[in-house]
Image (cartoon, rainbow, N blue to C red; front, side, top):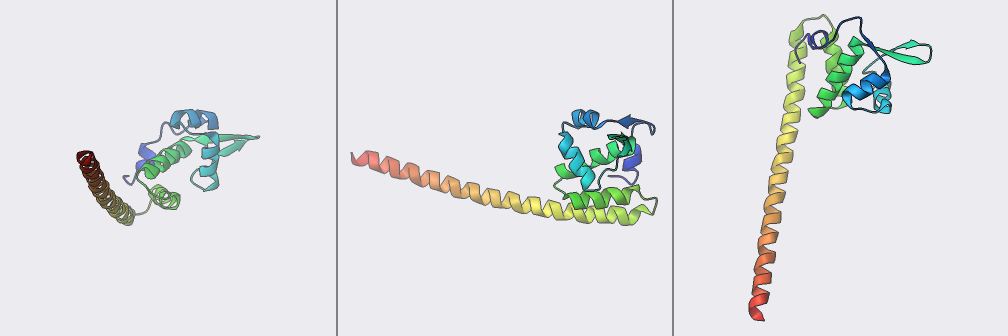
Length: 140
């Protein structure tokens, strides 16, 4: 996410959206969107009882979903998205993003290694089961 990710990913600044429109666009339930609101990831305005989402909310939702796909926690997503919205120097933001990505990459690499080990074990059991079946058939 570049430092201006929130600004760049936004449609026109005056655009507003209903919860239903965002739910359809991002293939989410309205309940999920309200959950992200409860987590402080998006902060819609109110028009009576209706939620009115701005282009900023839409972008934050988009970045939240992108972060989830990367395996980030919602707390990590919120911290990063909040950092990118600030006008401060982007160097600390990018460094933090790299730290978070490195940690998740390491976790994924460990999971991949664990899966490879498990697959090898499954293959060994399959081979042994086939050997025992063949041995049993030869005895008949």
